[in-house]
Image (cartoon, rainbow, N blue to C red; front, side, top):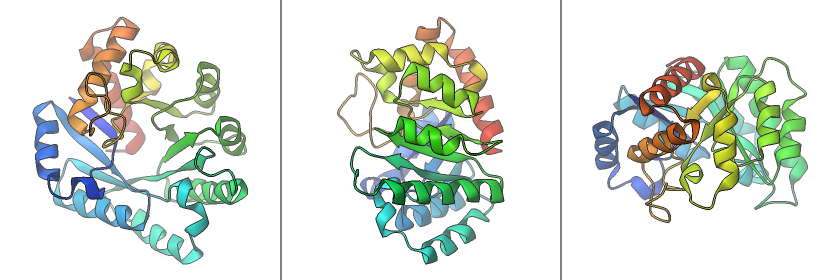
Amino acid sequence: MLIDTHTHINSDKFNDNYKEIIDRALNQDVKKMLVVGFDKSTNKRAIELAEKHDFLYATVGFHPTIASDIKEKDFEMLRQQLAHEKVVGVGECGLDFYWHKDNKETQITLFKQHIALSKEFNKPLIIHMRDASEATYNTLSEYEALSGVMHCYGGSVEMASMFLDLGLYISLGGPVTFKNAKTPKEVAKIIPLDKLLIETDSPYLSPHPFRGKTNEPARVKLIAEKIAELKDMSFKNISKHTTANATKLFNL
Protein backbone atom coordinates (compact mmCIF):
# COMPACT_ATOMS: atom_id res chain seq x y z
CA MET A 1 0.00 0.00 0.00
CA LEU A 2 1.15 3.53 -0.86
CA ILE A 3 0.00 6.98 0.19
CA ASP A 4 0.43 10.02 -2.05
CA THR A 5 0.88 12.75 0.55
CA HIS A 6 0.60 15.66 -1.90
CA THR A 7 -1.63 15.82 -4.94
CA HIS A 8 -3.58 18.64 -6.54
CA ILE A 9 -6.39 16.66 -8.13
CA ASN A 10 -8.48 19.59 -6.85
CA SER A 11 -6.99 21.79 -9.58
CA ASP A 12 -8.97 22.78 -12.68
CA LYS A 13 -6.71 20.53 -14.77
CA PHE A 14 -8.48 17.46 -13.39
CA ASN A 15 -12.08 18.70 -13.46
CA ASP A 16 -13.07 16.38 -16.31
CA ASN A 17 -11.18 13.23 -15.41
CA TYR A 18 -10.49 13.14 -11.68
CA LYS A 19 -12.43 9.88 -11.28
CA GLU A 20 -10.21 8.17 -13.87
CA ILE A 21 -7.14 9.59 -12.12
CA ILE A 22 -8.33 8.16 -8.79
CA ASP A 23 -9.11 4.75 -10.31
CA ARG A 24 -5.63 4.49 -11.84
CA ALA A 25 -4.09 5.32 -8.48
CA LEU A 26 -6.14 2.70 -6.65
CA ASN A 27 -5.13 0.14 -9.27
CA GLN A 28 -1.46 0.88 -8.45
CA ASP A 29 -2.12 0.23 -4.74
CA VAL A 30 -2.16 3.95 -3.89
CA LYS A 31 -4.89 3.50 -1.32
CA LYS A 32 -4.91 6.98 0.26
CA MET A 33 -4.24 10.45 -1.13
CA LEU A 34 -3.92 13.89 0.43
CA VAL A 35 -5.59 16.55 -1.70
CA VAL A 36 -3.71 19.76 -0.99
CA GLY A 37 -5.32 23.19 -1.19
CA PHE A 38 -3.36 26.34 -1.95
CA ASP A 39 -5.98 29.07 -2.41
CA LYS A 40 -9.64 29.69 -1.63
CA SER A 41 -11.06 27.67 -4.53
CA THR A 42 -8.72 24.66 -4.20
CA ASN A 43 -9.21 24.56 -0.43
CA LYS A 44 -12.95 24.28 -0.98
CA ARG A 45 -12.54 21.69 -3.71
CA ALA A 46 -10.15 19.59 -1.60
CA ILE A 47 -12.76 19.30 1.15
CA GLU A 48 -15.50 18.47 -1.36
CA LEU A 49 -13.43 15.61 -2.77
CA ALA A 50 -12.51 14.33 0.70
CA GLU A 51 -16.17 14.28 1.68
CA LYS A 52 -17.00 12.13 -1.34
CA HIS A 53 -14.29 9.49 -0.88
CA ASP A 54 -13.17 7.76 2.32
CA PHE A 55 -9.61 7.36 1.01
CA LEU A 56 -9.13 11.06 0.22
CA TYR A 57 -8.09 13.63 2.82
CA ALA A 58 -7.83 17.40 2.49
CA THR A 59 -5.37 20.07 3.57
CA VAL A 60 -6.03 23.79 3.37
CA GLY A 61 -3.80 26.84 3.23
CA PHE A 62 -2.51 29.75 1.18
CA HIS A 63 0.46 29.35 -1.15
CA PRO A 64 3.23 31.94 -0.68
CA THR A 65 2.86 33.11 -4.29
CA ILE A 66 -0.51 34.65 -3.38
CA ALA A 67 0.67 36.13 -0.06
CA SER A 68 -0.02 39.73 -1.10
CA ASP A 69 -3.64 38.90 -1.94
CA ILE A 70 -4.60 37.31 1.37
CA LYS A 71 -6.80 39.30 3.76
CA GLU A 72 -7.61 38.68 7.40
CA LYS A 73 -11.14 37.59 6.47
CA ASP A 74 -9.63 34.79 4.38
CA PHE A 75 -8.19 33.33 7.57
CA GLU A 76 -11.65 33.27 9.13
CA MET A 77 -12.72 30.81 6.42
CA LEU A 78 -9.48 28.85 6.83
CA ARG A 79 -10.12 28.42 10.54
CA GLN A 80 -13.59 27.04 9.83
CA GLN A 81 -12.16 24.61 7.27
CA LEU A 82 -9.43 23.42 9.63
CA ALA A 83 -12.11 22.25 12.05
CA HIS A 84 -13.44 19.84 9.40
CA GLU A 85 -12.84 16.18 10.30
CA LYS A 86 -11.40 15.33 6.86
CA VAL A 87 -8.92 18.24 6.90
CA VAL A 88 -5.65 16.76 8.15
CA GLY A 89 -3.05 19.46 7.50
CA VAL A 90 -2.26 23.17 7.24
CA GLY A 91 -0.99 24.26 3.85
CA GLU A 92 0.32 24.35 1.26
CA CYS A 93 2.17 27.24 2.85
CA GLY A 94 5.74 28.46 3.13
CA LEU A 95 8.11 30.74 1.24
CA ASP A 96 8.79 31.20 -2.47
CA PHE A 97 11.49 33.70 -3.41
CA TYR A 98 11.77 32.31 -6.93
CA TRP A 99 8.57 33.85 -8.25
CA HIS A 100 8.29 36.72 -5.77
CA LYS A 101 11.26 38.57 -4.30
CA ASP A 102 9.50 41.86 -3.62
CA ASN A 103 7.25 40.75 -0.72
CA LYS A 104 9.47 38.56 1.41
CA GLU A 105 8.27 39.98 4.71
CA THR A 106 4.64 39.56 3.67
CA GLN A 107 5.34 35.92 2.85
CA ILE A 108 7.06 35.37 6.20
CA THR A 109 4.13 36.93 8.07
CA LEU A 110 1.69 34.69 6.21
CA PHE A 111 3.84 31.63 6.91
CA LYS A 112 3.89 32.44 10.63
CA GLN A 113 0.09 32.67 10.62
CA HIS A 114 -0.03 29.14 9.19
CA ILE A 115 2.42 27.90 11.83
CA ALA A 116 0.19 29.37 14.54
CA LEU A 117 -2.83 27.57 13.05
CA SER A 118 -0.86 24.32 12.93
CA LYS A 119 -0.25 24.56 16.64
CA GLU A 120 -3.78 25.69 17.49
CA PHE A 121 -5.49 22.90 15.54
CA ASN A 122 -2.77 20.31 16.18
CA LYS A 123 -2.46 19.57 12.46
CA PRO A 124 0.86 19.34 10.59
CA LEU A 125 2.26 21.91 8.18
CA ILE A 126 2.72 21.21 4.48
CA ILE A 127 5.69 23.44 3.71
CA HIS A 128 6.58 24.83 0.28
CA MET A 129 10.12 26.16 -0.12
CA ARG A 130 11.68 27.53 -3.30
CA ASP A 131 14.85 29.62 -3.39
CA ALA A 132 14.20 30.34 0.28
CA SER A 133 16.01 27.65 2.27
CA GLU A 134 17.68 29.95 4.78
CA ALA A 135 14.61 32.11 5.38
CA THR A 136 12.40 29.04 5.72
CA TYR A 137 14.73 27.46 8.25
CA ASN A 138 15.14 30.71 10.21
CA THR A 139 11.37 31.17 10.40
CA LEU A 140 10.70 27.59 11.51
CA SER A 141 13.56 27.56 14.02
CA GLU A 142 11.78 30.23 16.09
CA TYR A 143 9.27 27.56 17.14
CA GLU A 144 9.45 24.43 19.27
CA ALA A 145 7.67 21.11 18.79
CA LEU A 146 6.92 21.63 15.13
CA SER A 147 4.84 19.13 13.19
CA GLY A 148 5.01 19.02 9.42
CA VAL A 149 6.68 18.03 6.20
CA MET A 150 9.03 19.71 3.76
CA HIS A 151 6.98 19.04 0.67
CA CYS A 152 8.70 17.92 -2.53
CA TYR A 153 12.00 18.83 -0.93
CA GLY A 154 14.43 20.44 -3.35
CA GLY A 155 17.10 21.84 -1.05
CA SER A 156 20.59 20.66 -0.18
CA VAL A 157 21.64 17.60 1.81
CA GLU A 158 22.97 19.90 4.55
CA MET A 159 19.69 21.79 4.86
CA ALA A 160 17.72 18.53 4.85
CA SER A 161 19.59 17.49 7.99
CA MET A 162 18.74 20.82 9.61
CA PHE A 163 15.03 20.46 8.84
CA LEU A 164 15.12 16.92 10.20
CA ASP A 165 16.65 18.30 13.40
CA LEU A 166 13.58 20.55 13.74
CA GLY A 167 11.48 17.38 13.85
CA LEU A 168 10.09 17.70 10.34
CA TYR A 169 9.53 14.98 7.77
CA ILE A 170 11.04 15.16 4.28
CA SER A 171 8.87 14.28 1.29
CA LEU A 172 10.33 13.38 -2.10
CA GLY A 173 8.62 13.57 -5.46
CA GLY A 174 9.33 13.17 -9.16
CA PRO A 175 12.74 14.93 -9.24
CA VAL A 176 14.34 12.03 -7.34
CA THR A 177 13.81 9.95 -10.50
CA PHE A 178 15.29 12.48 -12.94
CA LYS A 179 18.49 11.22 -14.53
CA ASN A 180 20.42 14.47 -14.01
CA ALA A 181 19.14 15.20 -10.49
CA LYS A 182 22.11 14.49 -8.23
CA THR A 183 21.06 16.33 -5.10
CA PRO A 184 17.58 14.78 -4.64
CA LYS A 185 19.19 11.35 -4.93
CA GLU A 186 21.76 12.23 -2.25
CA VAL A 187 18.98 13.57 -0.03
CA ALA A 188 17.03 10.33 -0.45
CA LYS A 189 19.99 8.34 0.80
CA ILE A 190 20.33 10.27 4.07
CA ILE A 191 16.68 10.58 5.13
CA PRO A 192 15.93 8.22 8.04
CA LEU A 193 13.18 5.75 7.23
CA ASP A 194 11.03 7.11 10.03
CA LYS A 195 11.07 10.63 8.53
CA LEU A 196 10.49 9.82 4.85
CA LEU A 197 7.34 10.57 2.86
CA ILE A 198 6.54 10.28 -0.84
CA GLU A 199 4.33 12.39 -3.09
CA THR A 200 3.58 13.26 -6.70
CA ASP A 201 2.70 16.97 -6.43
CA SER A 202 0.51 16.10 -9.41
CA PRO A 203 -0.18 17.53 -11.95
CA TYR A 204 3.41 18.79 -11.67
CA LEU A 205 6.85 17.13 -11.69
CA SER A 206 5.95 13.84 -13.29
CA PRO A 207 8.63 11.20 -12.62
CA HIS A 208 10.81 9.52 -15.23
CA PRO A 209 9.88 8.19 -17.81
CA PHE A 210 6.91 10.58 -17.87
CA ARG A 211 8.89 13.77 -17.23
CA GLY A 212 7.21 16.78 -18.81
CA LYS A 213 3.78 15.14 -18.92
CA THR A 214 0.82 15.67 -16.62
CA ASN A 215 1.51 13.90 -13.35
CA GLU A 216 -1.00 11.86 -11.34
CA PRO A 217 -1.09 9.96 -8.02
CA ALA A 218 -0.61 6.52 -9.63
CA ARG A 219 2.99 7.51 -10.39
CA VAL A 220 3.96 7.76 -6.74
CA LYS A 221 4.87 4.09 -7.16
CA LEU A 222 7.72 5.08 -9.51
CA ILE A 223 9.06 7.44 -6.85
CA ALA A 224 8.94 4.75 -4.17
CA GLU A 225 10.72 2.32 -6.48
CA LYS A 226 13.54 4.79 -7.19
CA ILE A 227 14.01 5.56 -3.49
CA ALA A 228 14.15 1.84 -2.74
CA GLU A 229 16.88 1.50 -5.36
CA LEU A 230 18.84 4.46 -3.96
CA LYS A 231 18.61 3.15 -0.41
CA ASP A 232 19.36 -0.41 -1.49
CA MET A 233 16.13 -1.61 0.08
CA SER A 234 13.08 -3.46 -1.09
CA PHE A 235 10.12 -1.60 -2.52
CA LYS A 236 8.00 -3.34 0.13
CA ASN A 237 10.14 -1.84 2.89
CA ILE A 238 9.86 1.70 1.49
CA SER A 239 6.13 1.28 1.00
CA LYS A 240 5.71 0.03 4.59
CA HIS A 241 7.65 2.88 6.19
CA THR A 242 6.29 5.75 4.10
CA THR A 243 2.73 4.55 4.65
CA ALA A 244 3.28 4.28 8.40
CA ASN A 245 4.87 7.74 8.48
CA ALA A 246 2.02 9.39 6.58
CA THR A 247 -0.55 7.65 8.75
CA LYS A 248 1.20 8.86 11.89
CA LEU A 249 1.92 12.45 10.81
CA PHE A 250 -1.54 13.16 9.40
CA ASN A 251 -3.44 10.99 11.88
CA LEU A 252 -5.17 9.14 9.07
